[in-house]
Amino acid sequence: MRVVIAEDLALLRDGLTRLLRDNGIEVIAAVRDGDALVREVLAHQPELAVVDIRLPPEFRDEGLRAALEVRRRAPRTAILVVSQYVEETYAAELLAEGAGGVGYLLKDRIMHVADFLEAVHRVADGGTALDPDVVAQLFRARREDAPLARLTPREREVLSLMAEGRSNAGIAETLVLSVGAVEKHIQSIMSKLDLPQAASDHRRVLAVLAYLREGS
Image (cartoon, rainbow, N blue to C red; front, side, top):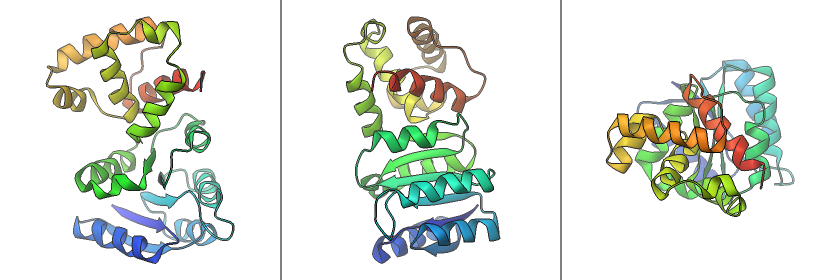
């Protein structure tokens, strides 16, 4: 896998580069601003871009804008954005087009190396990885919603892991359930929330996120 990193903090940029390279991932460029990100992606067509949402010069949403430009001009490059804070609007905008190969993680998650590397590979493979704190905030925004209230505590756990982008096998491992039991929970969740069944994992995740965003 080939990766381009866009991060303005030199220490974090170098740390990310070293972490990925130490785990067999080729970092072909590490830059500090959005223009350089777009330029390097178009030149090298990497499998993944890891992008800080806030980049120079104004440190607002320059990284997100560059990521969306990458999605438009190099759609085969997956996007994993990182942020210091939960910013629902940015997460929603990145996910709005309904395609896979996108992720949104808080920077603290990078410290959990195994989880971060799992998210890198999942997004690069066309899946979706959403930070658990973002998922939790979306759930809180809908806590008064009647259909969501109909879910059992176990179904809520399954739904949260679905929204993070985990596969049925990953959910089963996390909750110590059989894959068959997870599938039954998901069928019940989809029915209670009136969500369509989906053939691929990332479309299932996006369906869940679409539901959650309605009340956020």
